[in-house]
Length: 143
Image 1 (spheres, rainbow, N blue to C red):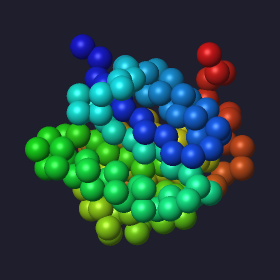
Image 2 (image 1 turned 45 degrees about the vertical axis):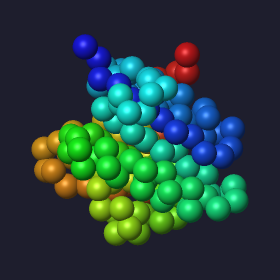
Image 3 (image 1 turned 180 degrees about the horizontal axis):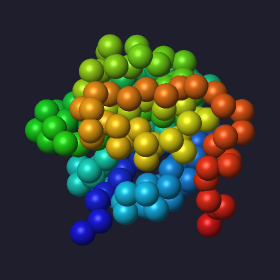
Image 4 (image 1 turned 90 degrees about the vertical axis):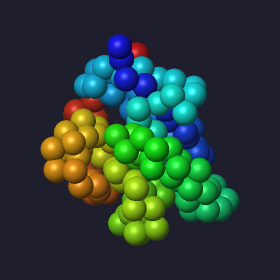
């Protein structure tokens, strides 16, 4: 049975697009299907925007709601991506140490490798680098 992915998207239209690409990527690399029910998901991702009002507060508030699920289900993967992730970086892990993945808007194509490393090393992964064009070389054309 395919594993389930839940993505909560904050902010701009570009994030809506990126979230759809992340869903496609996770379907191809990890046989995951998108779900609207966060409680049933095997992976929870926040795709964040730093332009909108109170962006950081929204992120940490949502992470706080997911914390109990992580305590009950340690194999649940929680990730934060997008612009807030790029700006906050390891501060996210300091404030929410149960987060597994932190990735920027230019590095979501590296999620499959980050997940593989997470599973083998059992350590949170951060990749907020900003390669200019690499993301587009690594992704399949949009559907």
